[in-house]
Length: 207
Image 1 (cartoon, rainbow, N blue to C red):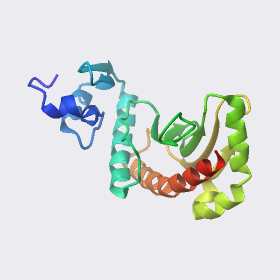
Image 2: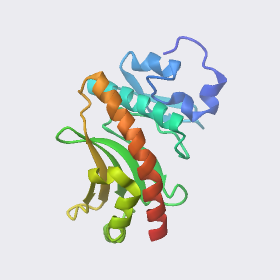
Image 3: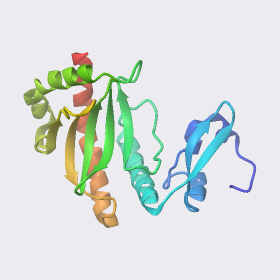
Image 4: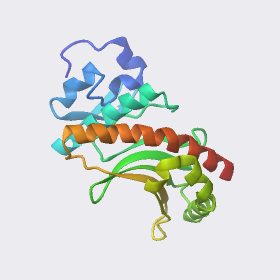
């Protein structure tokens, strides 16, 4: 696709293959012709590409710019994600070692809303609900720690589903004008900057 020999970094660093429409020159080449990297096997040196639709390109561009802003903020995460054209992006697992229990996620929701969320899914519904309930008991402390952001906080136990969600919401859709999306990215970085340490602390204390 590049029409030239791949650099050594392509074989040494998984991040070289990230779908980044902002900072990576190489990924702009495949994104510009409506392809995205959907799977990368570094051991076998195989990259799998998948066609993307126009909305998928919008999501990749939005999350690419959001990632750039998050990295400038220096929020800690073990591995920088790669936008894949979906309406959500997992930023970090909590805890980052061992079996996944919760994840910090950015996602576009229905009815023109965007959220910064803690998604609880240990793989076991009863354990998920127990953790949610434990965190809910601490909601007043969490609200104080989140400050003004607490007004945007919603608790969704989702009794009919396996997982549960705790999220901060803001109005916003991927089809909004570019200047509106830029403001949404600013809010998302600020929100995660407070939400991440607060929820990480309470999750780890509740295990």
